Image (tube, rainbow, N blue to C red; front, side, top):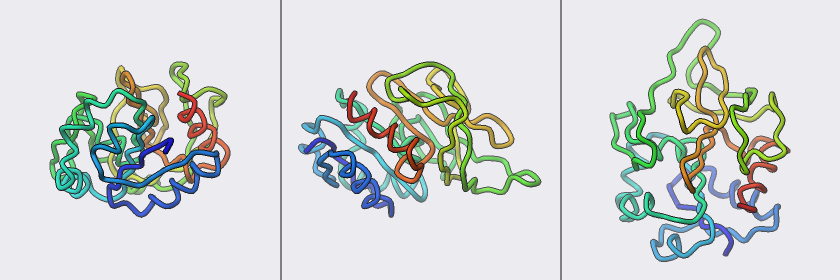
Amino acid sequence: MDVAIIDSGGANLASLQYALERLGARARVTRDAALIRSAPRVLLPGVGSAQAAMRRLQDAQLPALLPGLTQPVLGICLGMQLLFGTSEEGPTRCLGVLPDTVRRIPAAPGLPVPHMGWNRLDLRCPDPLLEGIAPGEHVYFVHSFAAAPGPATLATARYGTDLSAVVRRDNFWGTQFHPERSARTGARILANFLRI
Protein backbone atom coordinates (compact mmCIF):
# COMPACT_ATOMS: atom_id res chain seq x y z
CA MET A 1 0.00 0.00 0.00
CA ASP A 2 1.36 3.43 -1.00
CA VAL A 3 -1.50 5.56 0.34
CA ALA A 4 -4.07 5.07 3.08
CA ILE A 5 -7.28 6.90 2.22
CA ILE A 6 -9.14 7.54 5.46
CA ASP A 7 -12.71 6.30 5.20
CA SER A 8 -14.50 9.50 6.16
CA GLY A 9 -17.76 8.36 4.57
CA GLY A 10 -17.55 10.70 1.57
CA ALA A 11 -18.87 9.91 -1.87
CA ASN A 12 -15.51 10.72 -3.50
CA LEU A 13 -13.56 7.80 -1.99
CA ALA A 14 -13.75 5.58 -5.07
CA SER A 15 -12.83 8.41 -7.47
CA LEU A 16 -9.82 9.31 -5.31
CA GLN A 17 -8.69 5.70 -5.18
CA TYR A 18 -9.07 5.42 -8.96
CA ALA A 19 -7.16 8.69 -9.53
CA LEU A 20 -4.25 7.40 -7.44
CA GLU A 21 -4.26 4.01 -9.13
CA ARG A 22 -4.10 5.73 -12.56
CA LEU A 23 -0.85 7.28 -11.28
CA GLY A 24 0.50 3.83 -10.36
CA ALA A 25 -0.13 4.05 -6.60
CA ARG A 26 -1.70 1.30 -4.52
CA ALA A 27 -4.35 2.97 -2.38
CA ARG A 28 -6.54 1.45 0.32
CA VAL A 29 -9.63 2.97 1.94
CA THR A 30 -9.49 2.29 5.68
CA ARG A 31 -10.41 3.39 9.19
CA ASP A 32 -7.85 1.06 10.76
CA ALA A 33 -5.54 3.12 12.97
CA ALA A 34 -2.61 0.70 12.62
CA LEU A 35 -2.81 0.79 8.81
CA ILE A 36 -3.05 4.57 8.80
CA ARG A 37 -0.11 4.92 11.19
CA SER A 38 2.13 2.65 9.08
CA ALA A 39 1.11 3.96 5.62
CA PRO A 40 3.81 5.86 3.67
CA ARG A 41 1.23 8.59 2.86
CA VAL A 42 -2.26 9.42 4.10
CA LEU A 43 -5.19 11.11 2.36
CA LEU A 44 -7.98 12.67 4.41
CA PRO A 45 -10.89 13.28 2.03
CA GLY A 46 -14.29 14.60 2.98
CA VAL A 47 -17.63 15.78 1.67
CA GLY A 48 -20.65 16.93 3.64
CA SER A 49 -20.59 18.61 7.04
CA ALA A 50 -17.65 19.07 9.39
CA GLN A 51 -19.76 17.90 12.31
CA ALA A 52 -20.69 14.59 10.66
CA ALA A 53 -17.13 13.99 9.42
CA MET A 54 -15.61 14.58 12.86
CA ARG A 55 -18.21 12.24 14.36
CA ARG A 56 -17.15 9.51 11.90
CA LEU A 57 -13.48 10.09 12.78
CA GLN A 58 -14.33 9.96 16.51
CA ASP A 59 -16.25 6.69 16.02
CA ALA A 60 -13.05 5.25 14.52
CA GLN A 61 -10.96 6.78 17.36
CA LEU A 62 -8.83 8.75 14.89
CA PRO A 63 -8.80 12.39 16.13
CA ALA A 64 -6.00 11.68 18.63
CA LEU A 65 -3.93 9.80 16.02
CA LEU A 66 -4.13 12.06 12.97
CA PRO A 67 -2.41 15.26 14.24
CA GLY A 68 0.59 13.19 15.36
CA LEU A 69 1.25 11.50 12.01
CA THR A 70 4.76 12.11 10.67
CA GLN A 71 4.36 10.92 7.06
CA PRO A 72 2.93 13.19 4.31
CA VAL A 73 -0.78 13.82 4.87
CA LEU A 74 -3.09 15.50 2.34
CA GLY A 75 -6.53 16.78 3.33
CA ILE A 76 -8.92 17.26 0.40
CA CYS A 77 -11.93 19.63 0.42
CA LEU A 78 -13.67 19.03 3.77
CA GLY A 79 -10.59 17.00 4.74
CA MET A 80 -8.52 20.18 4.44
CA GLN A 81 -11.03 22.05 6.61
CA LEU A 82 -10.79 19.32 9.27
CA LEU A 83 -7.07 20.11 9.63
CA PHE A 84 -7.99 23.48 11.16
CA GLY A 85 -8.81 24.16 14.80
CA THR A 86 -12.53 24.78 14.42
CA SER A 87 -15.25 25.18 11.83
CA GLU A 88 -18.20 27.55 12.06
CA GLU A 89 -20.25 24.67 10.67
CA GLY A 90 -21.92 23.32 13.78
CA PRO A 91 -19.73 24.88 15.26
CA THR A 92 -17.29 21.98 15.28
CA ARG A 93 -13.97 21.35 16.97
CA CYS A 94 -11.63 19.87 14.34
CA LEU A 95 -8.14 18.32 14.40
CA GLY A 96 -6.16 21.44 15.29
CA VAL A 97 -3.16 20.91 12.99
CA LEU A 98 -3.72 24.51 11.83
CA PRO A 99 -4.90 27.02 14.45
CA ASP A 100 -7.46 29.04 12.50
CA THR A 101 -11.24 28.78 12.06
CA VAL A 102 -12.98 27.74 8.84
CA ARG A 103 -15.87 30.13 8.11
CA ARG A 104 -18.97 30.10 5.91
CA ILE A 105 -18.46 31.76 2.52
CA PRO A 106 -20.69 34.85 2.40
CA ALA A 107 -23.21 34.76 -0.43
CA ALA A 108 -23.23 37.75 -2.77
CA PRO A 109 -24.94 38.67 -6.05
CA GLY A 110 -23.52 36.41 -8.74
CA LEU A 111 -21.61 34.38 -6.13
CA PRO A 112 -23.95 31.66 -4.84
CA VAL A 113 -23.02 29.35 -1.98
CA PRO A 114 -21.99 26.60 -2.27
CA HIS A 115 -19.15 27.66 -4.51
CA MET A 116 -19.22 25.03 -7.27
CA GLY A 117 -17.07 25.04 -10.36
CA TRP A 118 -13.67 25.83 -11.82
CA ASN A 119 -11.53 28.59 -10.37
CA ARG A 120 -7.99 29.87 -10.89
CA LEU A 121 -5.13 29.15 -8.51
CA ASP A 122 -3.04 32.13 -7.42
CA LEU A 123 0.28 30.77 -6.18
CA ARG A 124 1.82 32.49 -3.14
CA CYS A 125 4.98 30.48 -2.55
CA PRO A 126 6.75 27.46 -4.04
CA ASP A 127 6.21 24.02 -2.56
CA PRO A 128 6.85 20.43 -3.71
CA LEU A 129 3.07 19.84 -3.87
CA LEU A 130 2.76 22.61 -6.47
CA GLU A 131 5.79 21.72 -8.58
CA GLY A 132 4.96 22.18 -12.27
CA ILE A 133 1.73 24.10 -11.54
CA ALA A 134 1.59 27.47 -13.30
CA PRO A 135 -0.15 30.54 -11.86
CA GLY A 136 -3.73 30.76 -13.09
CA GLU A 137 -4.30 27.05 -13.66
CA HIS A 138 -7.89 26.00 -13.00
CA VAL A 139 -9.11 23.48 -10.40
CA TYR A 140 -12.57 22.28 -9.38
CA PHE A 141 -14.25 23.45 -6.14
CA VAL A 142 -17.40 22.35 -4.31
CA HIS A 143 -17.68 23.96 -0.85
CA SER A 144 -19.66 26.30 1.39
CA PHE A 145 -16.95 26.92 4.02
CA ALA A 146 -13.37 28.08 3.58
CA ALA A 147 -10.29 29.28 5.43
CA ALA A 148 -9.03 32.82 5.00
CA PRO A 149 -5.46 33.17 3.74
CA GLY A 150 -2.89 32.93 6.51
CA PRO A 151 0.72 31.93 7.19
CA ALA A 152 0.07 28.34 6.04
CA THR A 153 -1.47 29.36 2.69
CA LEU A 154 0.47 28.25 -0.41
CA ALA A 155 -2.18 29.24 -2.98
CA THR A 156 -5.45 31.13 -3.01
CA ALA A 157 -8.55 31.30 -5.17
CA ARG A 158 -10.85 34.29 -5.45
CA TYR A 159 -14.59 33.92 -4.86
CA GLY A 160 -15.73 37.36 -3.80
CA THR A 161 -12.70 37.39 -1.52
CA ASP A 162 -9.46 35.43 -1.41
CA LEU A 163 -9.79 31.92 0.05
CA SER A 164 -7.07 29.44 0.97
CA ALA A 165 -6.92 26.91 -1.88
CA VAL A 166 -3.75 25.08 -0.78
CA VAL A 167 -2.25 25.07 2.72
CA ARG A 168 0.70 23.44 4.41
CA ARG A 169 2.04 23.00 7.90
CA ASP A 170 5.04 20.69 8.27
CA ASN A 171 4.04 17.29 6.79
CA PHE A 172 0.35 18.26 6.45
CA TRP A 173 -1.02 19.70 3.20
CA GLY A 174 -4.57 20.57 2.23
CA THR A 175 -6.39 21.42 -0.99
CA GLN A 176 -9.80 23.07 -0.77
CA PHE A 177 -10.52 21.89 -4.31
CA HIS A 178 -10.87 18.30 -5.55
CA PRO A 179 -7.66 17.26 -7.36
CA GLU A 180 -9.33 14.03 -8.48
CA ARG A 181 -11.84 16.16 -10.44
CA SER A 182 -9.37 18.81 -11.63
CA ALA A 183 -8.10 17.20 -14.85
CA ARG A 184 -4.36 17.41 -15.58
CA THR A 185 -3.67 20.03 -12.91
CA GLY A 186 -5.21 17.85 -10.21
CA ALA A 187 -3.41 14.75 -11.47
CA ARG A 188 -0.11 16.64 -11.30
CA ILE A 189 -0.80 17.68 -7.69
CA LEU A 190 -1.61 14.09 -6.72
CA ALA A 191 1.53 12.87 -8.55
CA ASN A 192 3.58 15.47 -6.65
CA PHE A 193 2.09 14.23 -3.37
CA LEU A 194 3.12 10.67 -4.25
CA ARG A 195 6.72 11.88 -4.74
CA ILE A 196 6.93 13.78 -1.43
